[in-house]
Length: 211
Image (cartoon, rainbow, N blue to C red; front, side):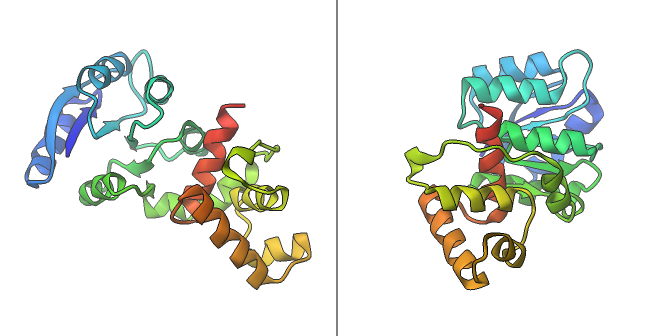
């Protein structure tokens, strides 16, 4: 797996490089320290994953990630930061990032990279526990998913999942049984080729960002 590390603290970058390359599965092919370098190095190398800090001088990581994903929607952008601000997390979700993990927990970084390489979306436990509340605070306008053969009822369920509602709450809101909601969600995940509710919320906010 080829990885680029972007962090304005060179000591962090070099430490990460040492840790990651101890695994035979990862090759750190380049290192940068600014958002501008992130865009340039991604275009130059087209890595499997770009590990991107958020707070940097000049262009921040969120803007760099947005430009990278605008150029290559299939890019795997994984944010690594010391900041777990709600605003940053929601922006990362809407951008279509593959994850948001905390820099302080070095041991989680290698498993996160491997999970992203395998098609998963990853968040550290601190953020995962807050996702329902974060998603509930964001608005949920209609988005057109007809090209995925998503029905109006399925679209509504996607919106409610993205707001952080569980199956029981969705069932009560739509006057359905919990079993029916579970079946709907299973069908939705199959249609969209997604793994779980977190990926479904990320999918929703990626399309919301495009409105």
